[in-house]
Image 1 (cartoon, rainbow, N blue to C red):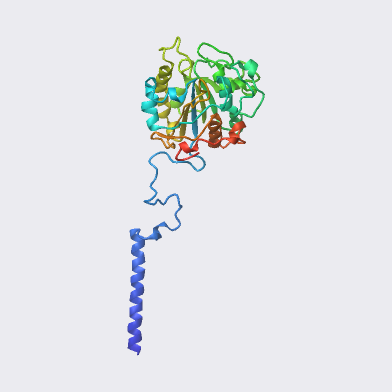
Image 2: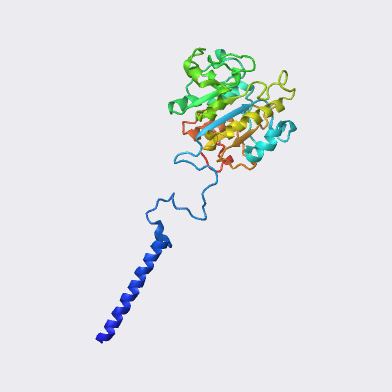
Amino acid sequence: MTSNLFRHSKLCWSIASLVILGLALLQLTGCGETTFINMPSDTAQSPANPPLATATPNSQHAIKTVFIIVMENHNWSNIQNNRSADYINNTLLPQASYALRYKNLPGVHPSEPNYLWLEAGTDFGIRDDSAPNRNHQSSQDHLVAYLEKAGISWKAYQEGISGKDCPLNSSGLYAPKHNPMVFFDDVTGHNDPASAYCIAHERPYKELADDLKKDSVARYNFITPNLCHDMHNASGCATPDAVKNGDTWLSDQVPLILNSKAFQDGGALFITWDESVGGDHPIGMIVLSPFAKGGGYSNNIPYTHSSTLRTVQEIFGVEPFLGDAANSNDLSDLFRIFP
């Protein structure tokens, strides 16, 4: 019996030794689940969920820098498939996400109230294109005021301004009716052309290229081309074709943004039009971003300028939602990662 117990004991120790040796080999070779014990979940990657090939979000928001370009006075039906818009149709749309049912607010015309809506979610009852000295607002409930309070940088790049004064009046191909920020007293110092705050934030468009190269752009950038380049005018412009003039300008300027570090490291570019013509028809909304669905994705979700405003507020986390943005859906469906 003693001999049998001895043999049984030796067998148990042999099995135990093999188990211990096997566990040691698993640890050395990295096999099994033991290699992932105590590892942070974001460092262990599963073959079923490979890392994204494009930019990935930071701990708070995917989108860090926003660019908005506003064009003028064309229905989407006059842009899509228009040979005069070759760059938009053959270069931008195949890589972008875009909306097919984006409209100005019902009955909101002409240009100025639509620009105000993009900034404040309301037109304040304005239905004309008068200068800031007549249509200025004392309200501090507007987007760049919220951004300022949150410590989020912003600039309005306006083509055709000098940068030496607050651009309150029309000059050449620049029109303040297309520059919503200058209608707010807290931006302009109550219509003061010498307002240092206004001058610091309202900059000539030509400065954007250098700011992109230096990676010194603000987090929110509102871009207004001049009256030829925004498709507004035809007379006196490069060609008598207003759409072609704007499309050519976009083909020269959009690549500067898309190739910038600010865009590639978490940027989003929105290209839209201020209003439709001949009624309340769909206008363009084109979204380019490392986080957009892209590839020519489009949808039929109804949007307005309130949608754009709400989207920007969500990106930067500034609330409460302004005006009609509180009642609107956002543009998140055009993105694969949002915000």
